[in-house]
Length: 313
Image 1 (cartoon, helix red, strand yellow):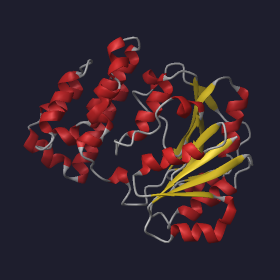
Image 2 (cartoon, helix red, strand yellow):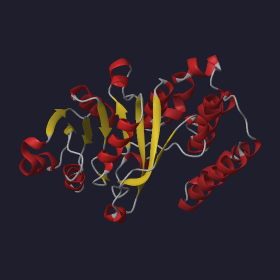
Image 3 (cartoon, helix red, strand yellow):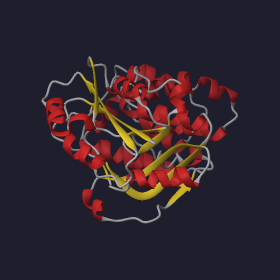
């Protein structure tokens, strides 16, 4: 039923929790695929000794998380790909809940689930999962993109017919995949029960680092989706892309090295919003000083979230 794909790179402090959360699932029909992305810690030895043949382990030279996920997906045997990062964990009823949705509904392309940064929810027991179908994902995604790399299950047929994770992107590669899956057709669902623990314990994870603009989704968003944007058949998608740029571009706009390209990106978006544009009217030198402080960065994100969630229809 499910092929669980785990990309692994130096996560020995968390990998036992991750794998144990899989082996404790109430739904038994799955395989576990772990791709070692050239790790230098003792994690693979630990996994081999503790789990043996329960885990299918593959090795590759260090190529990044996207290449590792793609490698695992290529080795998958089952109809649905369940993604899980090595430092995250699942509630025991995660796969059971996803299977409930897949069995109850038709033409299921992707299923997401609510996550938490607090593991206390593991103590909760669920009967029938609470979930909804996305009738217009990109209209809802303006306020919440919903899917994450440890709380998403995707029909394998998508990967058979389309490119997997974009290995040239180091930030936003997961968002890019969700968007392409959702644009490809089929039905998408979201489970509102909290079933995934999303960890921010590892200070070395990519989400904690600033990635060069040329390796981000926001830096290539117009070229990646140019055909969809140009067709103008999905205006909610076009609006979403404009808001995505507003929300993610500011660290690069207030950086002299990437300012010119960031300014071009901002000027190329289709939909413009005055209250969001106000942020980008701040002088670059002042904006740089603001975002270099933890508090400044936080309040800019809060401002953007507030404007997008509560003033844009």
